[in-house]
Length: 294
Image (cartoon, rainbow, N blue to C red; front, top):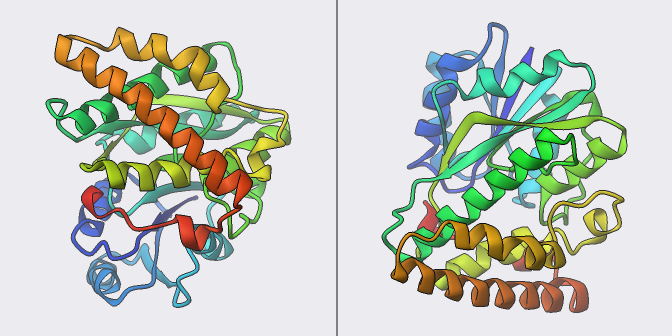
């Protein structure tokens, strides 16, 4: 049995598309749990649930953030495989089948999908999103081929239910926490590059920083930083990132945008160091809603 957990907050305009993309792909006996606190999103979920009994709404009235929402979903999930995704993204037509296939190997504890940017490449921030998702794709391909540790993408990944620990409610990168705990138990994390998920990325620099500080900040927290495994950090990005990014350039304008991206990433990691390592600001402060991705 498969359980899908979608987390959403004020995403009434997008949750329907997210649900519809999953429905025709789920194996018989599956369930789709939507954890959301707001009335507008809940109303849309209830409309779908009336037509599809496999859909259940899990209320989260206290609005404690995504880790707490995921813990609520995990408490009621009945599947032995849990698929995680968000209410503002859309998976590809065969994504679930590709995501589940590697679990035929009992050594596999989790499988991550492949994000694609639905933002236009012709804008600076849209181009940045394409560079970053392509860099992550190439890194995962290489590490998967050599059976190295992989980080799951929170936009779409699956894991064996019995391996998933309770997620600390102040974790900024819940996907990283789950990935590290599963690897520490001796299980392999695989990459399913055909398990595609389409993501709209920020269109302003302020929103870009808000989103990236909270996600990259998760790798500066002790939950991840003290793990024996590593795939993402400021030092690794400094050594590997420029080469991957420069390969992506196709014009002088894109070269200029790439150089600006290097500066922006430096700005990001400095903010992470200050906000997370030094000031130790909590999730409730750092996790700000990013409107331009909706």
